[in-house]
Image 1 (cartoon, helix red, strand yellow):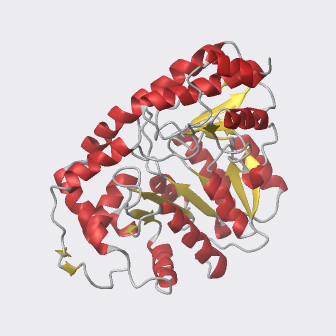
Image 2 (cartoon, rainbow, N blue to C red; image 1 turned 60 degrees about the horizontal axis):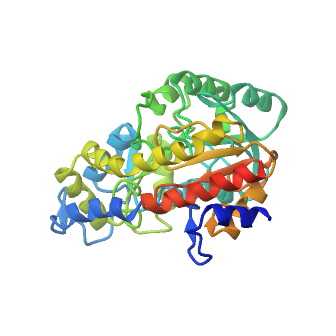
Image 3 (tube, rainbow, N blue to C red; image 1 turned 135 degrees about the vertical axis):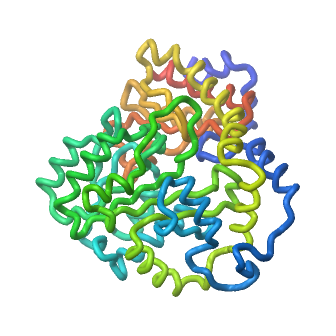
Length: 398
């Protein structure tokens, strides 16, 4: 009897037709329902902050939406702009501006190299690959990127022009960077500050599901070390309100923001101010803290379920992971270099996972062990089946 037959015998509910999916970190319908319920109590604003929301203009975003962004990112109002629905789009535009126009202290070219802590966010890596920018990987240490590895790279490599990070509940590992790690990282970068970009994607700034260390705002640390023109922070409400209709934020120095608005003015006559107005009204009705507490009630049981199912095989050494305290993912390392076989076997049993190497630049996981699970979207019953399939595959293959 082969592995598939063994697992099908143990899991009689596998019918060969149902497809389970843990590929992408999407909000569950129940999360979106929370926002829809409050949205239904709002009327559409057409004027806010003395601004006609129906018309062009205000490329930096509504003042009240910028206030919202500065609260989420913990940044200064004057250094925070509110824009359209995706922070990933902002990342693309920031990199485009650095590549084609150049910021004061952040310029990219075809010879540039970017430091990428891994495992990391697959769409960041694809974005950089599309520009032909070389990516150099470093591992994580307990409290952030491996500083010794970064120090060695800076000593030995030329044309290192940036780093890309998710500093809180990092996608997918769940790392939250300590203040000491960030300060030491920025001190390593300081000698390169004439041309260095710190891409700081704070997508999960509000997404704690367990007690998580508090962080000093990155811009405060950057200013202390003289890197205010090198830091680009982004975030959004996509996983706070509606993923299909969020608003995004960028924070950087006023010099950088001025250059960025000039760049964007060739792309768009202004952001979606109607959507920004709705978000401002939404968070007058519901506080960010209340919203996140309601979302946590849905997300936390799913993370606890994943840990409950996988902990027994973790304890016996069949896989390795750190239980995240927030964010949207579990990062699992198989005990053997067989992630591709795990993913393929799961697929044959009806469970879709990201391909091996997805969380590494160029799709190459040198150890062939890492697998990302995205448990937020399925309901609890479906998630239990997803993770049970995964557990059984790991058990038989390892």
